[in-house]
Image 1: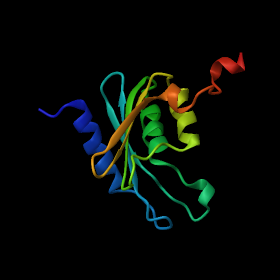
Image 2: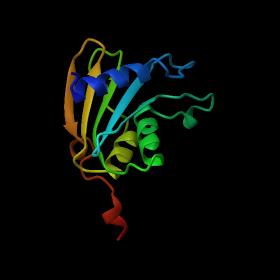
Image 3: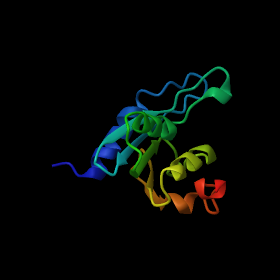
Image 4: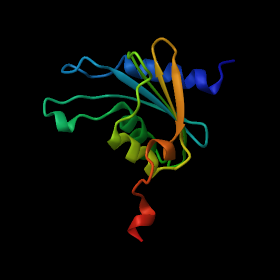
Length: 132
């Protein structure tokens, strides 16, 4: 039986294959595990107006949130890079919005990986408590 990490990696790899990247040719896949065990995947989706591009991490999160899942547990991000690829700043902020303790696993196609908690990826983060 496939364990959770293997399922997440497979889902991220499959999502990567669906990336729409005609400008960068840099496909990225992400897979997200909710606290109730659901998996949502996403790929990066580029746009000719570059600022409208959406990252794989945010695509997966937005799919989960739009399906009613607000409690996130773990995310795997996969790209064809020399080192495991970290999420961009915007994605780090969106990940942090849904929890300071979300495990984020970054992995390349060679199987190298590193893992951080969302609070480690965005120290001193702006969050909902700052709005009080």
